[in-house]
Length: 108
Image (cartoon, rainbow, N blue to C red; front, top):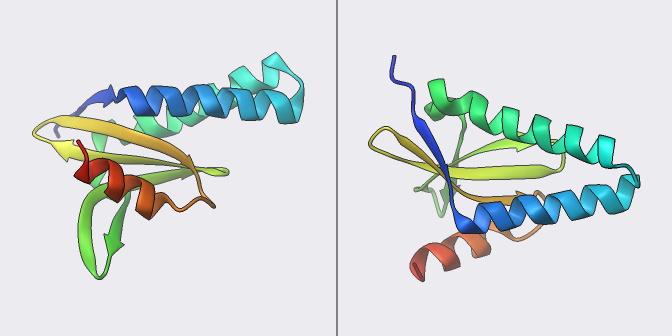
């Protein structure tokens, strides 16, 4: 079994900072916020042994190259390149993530 190396994009790091701010604002607790982020990252990093078991993301009936994993109100989007799992974005599940992902993918 191949274990993938995980890499977070600068955008996904920024997204994690946004999640931190959102959870801290909602909870008012650093302890809850740190626990939430730890669990979110654990969920993402649990995929390194089986990344293709994430949910494939389709648009217009075509695979976009992205998989995602859901953790509570957030979706972590990643793609695979050789033996690397590239986490591109971590977004609120109710946002227009298709537009965000496809726009940023076309402009990189």
